[in-house]
Image 1: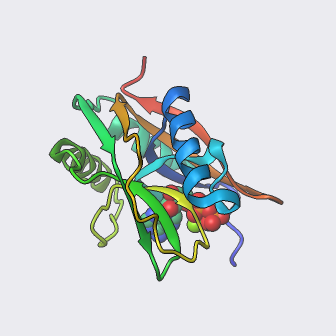
Image 2: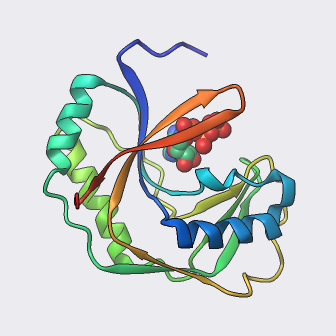
Length: 176
Ligand code: ATP
Ligand code: MG
């Protein structure tokens, strides 16, 4: 793997669960995936993957997101899925609110103004519960779906250490 240039940081925009939702997500991950689950502290929903980002680009992104407004929305996480190629077990919604897609489109519009080229893959709202998961997904949906009221978008840095990836929230919009 190429080592990143010294001023580049690996970044993404995400919905970042508060403690209550994180606890509930962690419980589902433990039930559905056992030992293979993503560490509790890493559970999140990626909105836009920014990748390796130089400092000046980060400044431009922050300016473009400064007046971001996040529509009132609530995610109802009520279904599991499994992607066999990437061996990912995920949690998602059978009715992802249109406002979430609009939020992602708004983020793309703002970032495009800074030269960011969004991925061509369509956005699929999901929370990765486990990696290297052979599948299949649990046959039954979660007994108690999780309600996640969304309030803001987090800018998160992905850091690597000996144990794998860990994440650090750098900023949130709208800011409090
Ligand atoms: P690791 O790569 O160590 O297995 P990870 O995938 O969680 O862990 P990152 O690769 O830094 O860590 O990814 C951070 C977030 O961005 C994750 O939600 C990941 O699924 C998502 N992501 C990573 N690469 C891409 C990509 N090319 N396109 C879309 N989303 C991505
Ligand atoms: Mg990765």
